[in-house]
Structure formats: C-alpha cells, structure tokens
Image (cartoon, rainbow, N blue to C red):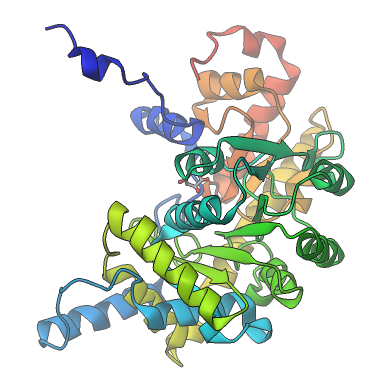
Length: 420
Ligand code: LMR
C-alpha cells in the first residue's frame, strides 16, 4: 500500500550515531565481540552492574510498598522535591545558593533535564538567540536545543586534535562574540566524548566571563564521580558557576554514577538568584514544558537516589562503590596504554591515560574504526570514542592488539566500509 501522503511528508530521519552503532553491536553475536559504544558502566565481566547501595534502597522501597506505606499515585509535576534538594546539595556542596532561589524539577535523566533547561532558556533568551555547544559534544545536544526552540545552534572549539587536549583559547575566542542572553552548554566533568575537561583556573575564568557577558549556562553533569573518582572535585565547574552567581541550569543525571540508566533519574536546577525569579522559572518549566510533555515524572528512581544520597549507611557505601567503578576504568586505561606502548603501536597514546571519565577519544580515523569492527568485531563510535567502562583487563589487551594491527596494516582497511 502506498504511504499515506501526510505521513510521507515526515522527513526520513536516522537515530544518532550512538544509538545506530549500539544496534549494530547488539546484532553481532561473535564471542570475541567488544562493545564499547554506549556510555554505560560494565563490571569486570563486561556485564551490566547494579550497585549494592542502589539495590538495598530499592529493596526498602519495595518493602514499604508491600507494607502499604507507599503507593503509586501521581507525583507533582516538579517531582519528588526531597530528591532534588539532595541532588543539588551533592553538586554544589558548600557553594549551594539558598534553596528558595533555585527552581528544581525531577527530570527524565540528563536528557530530560537539558530539554527542560533549553526550553526555559529558549523562552528567556532574546529573539534569534544562539545556543553554543563544544565542537565535539554529545550528539543529542543540538537536537535537544532545536526541539526546544533554538534556531541558531553554533559550535565553539574545544578539542585540539594535535594535542588531544583542550583548546581553551579557541573555546574562549569562539565564545567572545556571544551576545548577552546567549546560551552556552558546557559539560560538568568527564566531557563526552573527549574525556578532556577545563582546569579549575579555567572554570573560574569561564564563570566570571559568563557572568559579565550575561550568558545563560547549561551545565550538563552526567559523570559526577567518574572523572576523578571524587564527587567534590567533579563538581568544581558547577561550584565555580555558583560562586560567580551565573544564571545557569545544572542538569544532573544519576544514570552513570548510580547505574539508574533505565530509571531515568535526573534533576534540572535553575540558579535564579532570587526567590521570586525562582518561582517564576519553576512555574514556567512546569506549565509550559513538563506538564504538556509528560505531565509528571515517574516515582521510583528519584526515591532510590534520595535514599542513597541521604541514608547515613548507604551514602558512604555508594561513594565507595563509585570510587571502585572509577578506579576500574582508570585501570583498564592503563592496561590499554601499556599494551600499546609494549607493541610500539604507531602514534602517541598518552591521552588514553590523561583523558578522564568514561570515554577516551582515541583520535583514529573512521576507516580505522570500520576496520576494527569488520576485522575484530570491536564496536565504538565512528569518531573514535571508546566507552572505557566496556573494557575489562582481558579485552583491553585484545583491543590494543587489534588497534595495533589496524594501524600498521593497510590491508585491514581495504574491507567493506561501514554504512554509518
Ligand atoms: C552516551 O553518550 O553513550 C550515553 O550518554 C548514552 C546516550 O543516551 O547517548
């Protein structure tokens, strides 16, 4: 049957490279497959991991439900506020502004938080305003910005391919012309996809410029605790923005640091610097964004996170579990690096250990990525982003050997190119 002409008007779109590649990887059943596509933590056997602290919190919630102490009625549109309070305390620590000057909503993980922040700032920004993202960024940032109402989406320089480090001067020079009311998206810690972050001095300077230029800043905080293993250190960017009193929205995700991926547990918090302004922002976010989109958030993930963040036993336990996850990632980085060194693999590989967080941005070509997939069943993003959390001690060595072969052997690249 011919397609309905109205439906045929819909543009034929593809999902972004993360979801496309993840599907390809899932369909490959080769026993030696290495899947380092999605930024999701895996245990030492490359299996999904449920944090024991999270499991205990969920058990308690289930017991309360069974005992009739809880129910499944609707949440308010702004979600479970004790969770939001615990979340912003975690991020801003001693630099937390007064709670009643912050507009906070439980959001559908980091994506939902960025979506609410962008929609609110699209309404506050002067007409025709621009939203800025780092040149390499999470591929969903611009689609989220466009769907939230921004027509002008512009990239600023961030990653320097030569040094595989940060191009801070390029970043600030690209942002120099950003008009007051522009929106700048930055990554809190463990930049996705490059694993390259601002130093503390650079954060302080960025925050003071953002304040003086009257930008709205969206801080995407999906990896607090993963970059350095230290929650406070990874919150430095957020705290610098708070100290400089920047109008900003922090978008926290508890997908990675609590493993609550599918529970969609996040928080968007607008630092409005005034009680009346916070109320205005909250009411707008609820009435114009959340209610027409999903009405109210789900129940469970936020309550799990709230228990873990506030319980005197589970909180320190979670911090230890997070440190262990982040340490395991650092260990596989080192194993991969050592093997590349041992093999004298062409190129410089220091960035494998200097980049931080879940991702390594290898700096290899799409042809190399294709060859790794076709020859070795190794799946990563076409730009060469590797989710280090998907490797273990054994596969890190295999990965290094495969990479060495592909980089030395031109034949390896003569196979069918990828369709990605
Ligand atoms: C990623 O970057 O791999 C994760 O944040 C998963 C996602 O939703 O893209």
